[in-house]
Amino acid sequence: MSSESSFDIVSKMDMQELTNAVHQTERELENRFDFKGSKSSLKLEKDALIIASEDEYKLNAVIDILQTKMVKRGITLKNLDYGKIEPASVGVRQRLGLKQGVDQENAKKINILIRDSKLKVKSQIQGDQIRVTGKSRDDLQQIIQLLRNADLPLDLQFNNLK
Image (cartoon, rainbow, N blue to C red; front, side, top):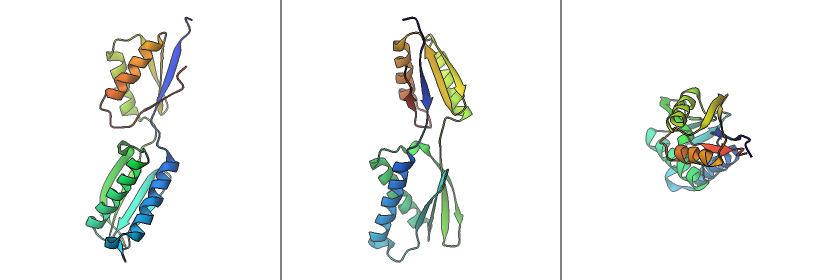
């Protein structure tokens, strides 16, 4: 059993769960007393979530409700990239970017963490994911534990452990 074992490091957001969280937030906005007659809205695009409201206070309340719904559905808040608040026709609007995949900067940080661990594994960046290979599955498990304990600005998943 001298063959190499490997796994992939990815960062993906479950879009179905995010859609469900957005719908739950919209339903709560319709029913809440402090939002009666208010023009607050959420719009889910391919790579962003656009939230609009009458003023910054209500905008922050909508974001707070959304974050609560996301956490309840098991979606991490690390994959949200908060844009600046800008004026809109309704009042104010904020764009929340959705991070998908491991970007180059974070991939380099992960590679450095893996190299500094002094374990006998190799890592290589493959687009928006990282493949880690090594002879010992124990070393791969230690790398997974190391990355889970590292304070990285994105949520990591570990796939295809072979």
